[in-house]
Length: 159
Image (cartoon, rainbow, N blue to C red; front, side):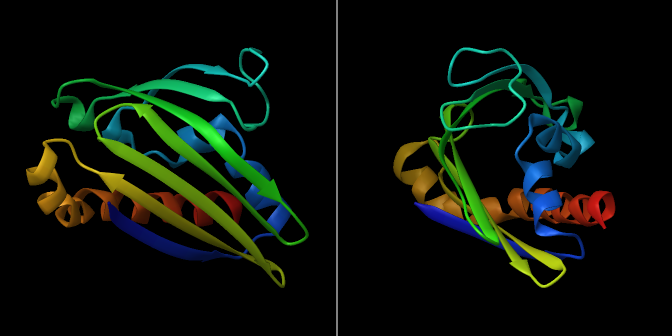
């Protein structure tokens, strides 16, 4: 699988950054408008609609239509791991259905004094079998602008 990583330092308290990223509203706020994200439903691990916190087992059904011209693509994410401790936290979401053959995104947060370090790690595999595996590293062309936007927005909204 291919791996993409990006990190940003946010001049905001750890608890604020962690809470922001723990809600579907954080996902909506950090997704570039050109992706045309439509969150269709969020269901908690107990079947509760619209849970406040994305706990392990939460399911997000959404669709994207990049630039408004690409075909609409459905995307189902499930929170598969979530841990929080003193000054560090993380959660991982996996794509169960969507445009990638595989997608696992680990969001990590670390307190550093009055600031927070946000680290994204995405392990992914493109569709198209062996061709997709060979082209996988080129996906950075699409991932980099998206994550650069996410990190810029995180700073703008939380600092």
